[in-house]
Image 1 (cartoon, one colour):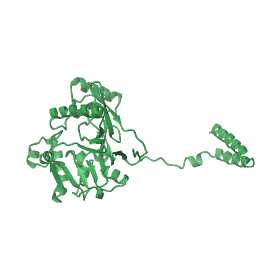
Image 2 (tube, rainbow, N blue to C red; image 1 turned 120 degrees about the vertical axis):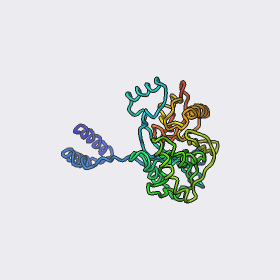
Image 3 (cartoon, helix red, strand yellow; image 1 turned 135 degrees about the horizontal axis):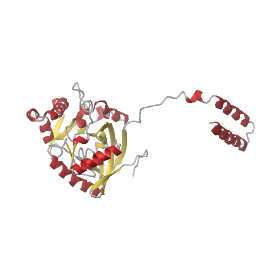
Image 4 (cartoon, rainbow, N blue to C red; image 1 turned 180 degrees about the vertical axis):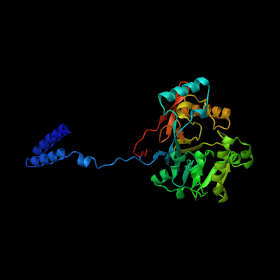
Length: 330
């Protein structure tokens, strides 16, 4: 500290002389000497701040404004992955070397078309993940929008970490003016009380939460369905394009990114049809890497969960969007 102050005094004294202010140097030296005598008085007053910046990130896709919305961070249990013994042994080794290998963020994405606000997935709300998740509505407000302004919510599937943010635990719509769109097969499967009654015990909470979350929108006439195939019976990805640029919101094509991109054959217990999920992932990853498509993924190890795929050996690597505070109008 004393060395630093001596150096600062020399710099300030030189600056004062060079500006022709020779009479200022003694005053500066006196002030700094006084500061050196009580160095801890001012420094001890500033408390630490444990909160981060708001969880959103914007980019342009043609004329579209896309905002990534942070919902929270969790850890994917390795027991939720299904792969060969050799692959799972390599996962266990990777976890020993880096305990954050299976860390994932939960995300939703807002698309401002200039005419409508379209939300793709709504995060977990209070239906999944406890206090670790459920921040999407706050991230939305931090980004300058309100839930009341959202016109449409496109749902990739009805797992509660993707739709829990639609509805509060007491049955109120978080997005009161939004129409919800979901695959018909997805809606028919998770909202069926008959199918729920025959489902395994550990799957029951998914049915119960989906039905409770959908109920107020169905009652208001704001629940709409359409037909498609996927990871759950009607799992859906959404591709937007503008001025020749594309972005794909791919839902749960990948859960544990650092494992499944290197080993696309590895499935998750949440895949209703394990074989179809692996086949779909293999086909889609190859196309997206070949076409260099921008991807928005709800589960990744890196915020803002936007990036592209690069072919790497028998698998793929993730090339994340590089953070910039500059709004690119090109």
